[in-house]
Image (cartoon, rainbow, N blue to C red; front, side, top):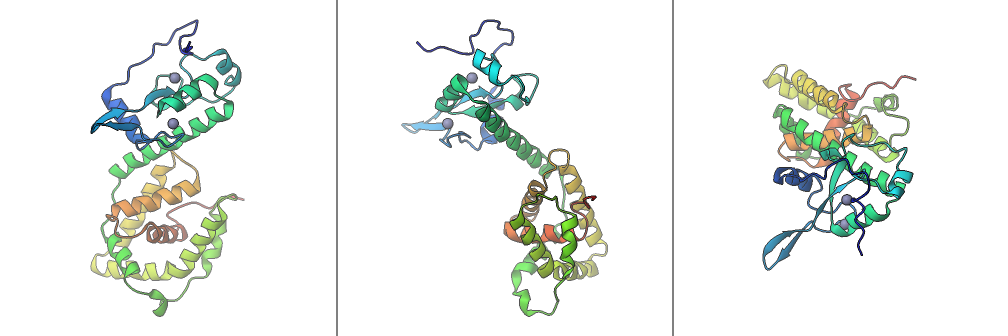
Length: 268
Ligand SMILES: [Zn+2]
Ligand SMILES: [Zn+2]
């Protein structure tokens, strides 16, 4: 006999039926894949599409005895277990396994997956509201256009002060990448913006402010500098209609780190 753990003694909360629109939100949030085993959440049978997912509660709607024991001190994503922030789509295998025999590690891991998805959603909403002058495309095109090593713009060796702006545990490889970007491209990008300013005076100031505004708008959803660095590069890529690679966009963000629009000095 299959025991339904959700049919537990003191039932207070009603199981909620999620509307079609909420299911679309949840489905696109996980990119149509079970976030645990990566199986597709849509099956095809004789060219008909069939749902292959279930709405799973991360913190259980009706905690079993085992749940109550292991989850007594955990942080919840929402006080209401039926809240969209506390549910996630899983394939039925992973859902059954999770409900029947979750460990605290599995709870924390699924919670972390969901938290990252919530941050990603907020980021997409923010992108829809944020504006960046299209001259950024000219800068990206110029960067891609030729081998600047052969030009005489020069290098900037003051990237050292970047250490004071990055968190102590900031990923080493990324930190070196940012330093390299600044040393190699800072003066060049400054030059490119000054060329733009000759045609449209004040444009560089406007772009700097837009970058700064986007940085501060990200802060409520994440304080993690690596996430911010990556999300800002993704945003530049979107705003420039995918003109440049994400690496080129990271060069631009590195410029604005050095130029003080992105990240603040970490007080010692
Ligand atoms: Zn699965
Ligand atoms: Zn369940």
